[in-house]
Image (cartoon, rainbow, N blue to C red):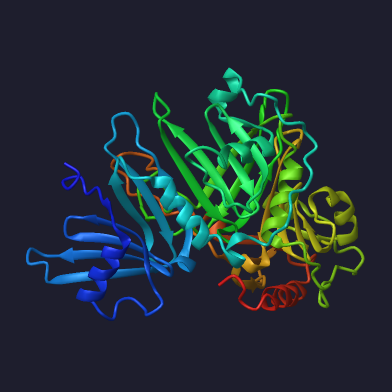
Length: 463
């Protein structure tokens, strides 16, 4: 039955290494050793001290064999899933740069947590384990028991829980899925599900099924998170604030209507209003993604100094065209979302929304609703911008334009209007951004010089 369902069984690693060296003498390096080995029929998995090797025999004769090597440095995320009551297997998913998602099924008796601990030790190392910034102090007291109300369960709204207790639970028992030196810095819970931000990664725990025996432990490396957004709660009837993480996890692609091209590009998390300080969460992610180092001030930042040209005409207002505003005033207004060492260097304002170009990132401020209480802040680090362009205004145009291309696939395929209608074009969302400027209220080439300085200064560190 396990062979039919492609479920691998654990084998002796020394025997697996000996078999590989005998059959393919040049496959393993002289200082490379198999630490964990698994076999399924003609195929096998070998986890060495340097990489994961997937052996796949092809064809009826088995003479054609593929040996796929996955260095641990290429893994951007991974997940293990325990077996449910009716399941016959446990699972491992690897999200590998340039390859996509690799799925491995093992017999139910396999110690999947041993494999997860092995990956922790070999993947969560060096720069891939984050910049080592600590958590910003949260101003809301964690709930004592982590219980979730009915409406929050329905809305999937999480509340903050004690990080120390979460760390103790994850380091105890048969799971023990954290590294010895790893610290849980923030933790949240909604019903049976929870997630935490540790010193080494973002970890989401998804409890599935009626019995709750099937659990997915999903790890996202800090460098895999390329941008983030927080949204405050609105009026009285709006019960939640929101966090969105944008990742470059190399998941399988789809073009199904009503679906994103990559399912793991966005990780959406709702917080119960009053049970999490959304701005403290924002500052935490800023420290993790941007780092806490001080950025040198820009030598090219500029603001409009011509009198009478910074107003907003009716056509510009209708088109939501941005104009330059004073960056110092913008910094005072939005100091609560900036790092201590971060400064606004250029600022732009449309009807109500704003765009801040700081010393470390681009921040889009989107005010929503009649009152404007609901507001989202999307942070795009300069290291995530892979290309940019400026487009001057034509003879009959009212606006110029800044275009940004980013390092993650956020493309969405909208649903068809009617069943027989052709599929509508895909929406790039945050993969490609276009910002309109009022042509006589923005020095477009000052913007270009600023973007050149900021994006070229990072020297390809996002690669």
